[in-house]
Picture 1 (cartoon, one colour):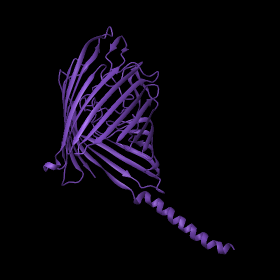
Picture 2 (picture 1 turned 30 degrees about the vertical axis):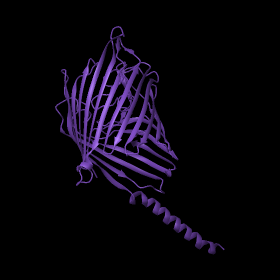
Picture 3 (picture 1 turned 60 degrees about the vertical axis):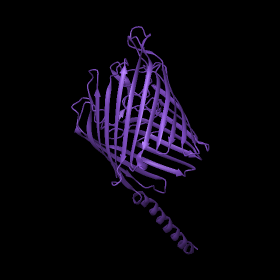
Picture 4 (picture 1 turned 45 degrees about the vertical axis):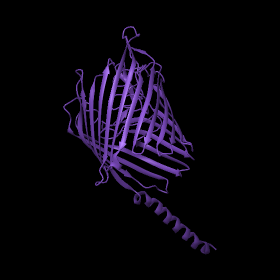
Length: 438
């Protein structure tokens, strides 16, 4: 009896072992290695007696992506490295290199366990470890030599068009330093910045069949600040092939505990209890080109720092080194973000893809913003005693080389001018990128 059962059991064991071996072999057989080589040059020509800033660097990102064991579990890792071609002879390399230290560096940029379950109609995925995260209002930066990363957990769930993501982080790997950093307050308290233990972020989005897309995102820095953002976007397709996209955006940030003092960011200006920004914009697409226009408004509670009152603004990060998403088209810019208390913003833009004119790969975009009625407060009394204004012109030229796969370039140029904006100065900024993806 046992002898008769032994053969099918042996066959089943052999098949199981073979399947297991095949599943485990997927880990390396489906693995890929890729990355990006980049050289980037930034020149910030500051006026009004302020020191210029910028640098020129070369960098490399090498990504290892494993296959999935049992089509569920895998592991990814990335190496990041940057060196100075020209450190700009300045103390401020615009986050291309470590601030105050112009030497290059290399580091383990990512190392995380990944998992996926289900399919695109109903599925769940996660990343755990050192990884890039863009979930909720937890964000990052990829606009310098190398990208930033977080230490934490990032999850994503989709159910028939509904997408929900949740992330938790407790450390950050900035874009311009070789070492992982604790998240700390922007302001020193008793001579020391206080640690922010963790940040939690969540998002939920849904796309309706009629073209309406809605999205809610949030972020909570423990005992520091919290934020919520609501976005609704509707796209209408016209009979002549043109389209009209209408977007509304509301963002609110609030104090979230004992660590918040009102001061936020490198410039020192923040808000008291809360700050709100409204953005409404429309985009008209016509073949290879588009035009866009938007209106924005910010309201931020005033506050006092020491013995001085400060002009309020919408601080949207989650502490020093801790990036927060800023997803408002009207207020966002290359040189400065327009989000001061009382500021009203008008923005117009246009863009064109030159493929049909015999120049495939070339696109040009232009954007103009005007911010006015900024409520500048008197440092002694806290009362509004003047208003300020600012403008920015931004040009963005991108080109994908047609005869070299993966090679692209980008040139961005911004002209910023201000009138009595606290702590700001006129500035012309140039950014030049040359990227090769492999």
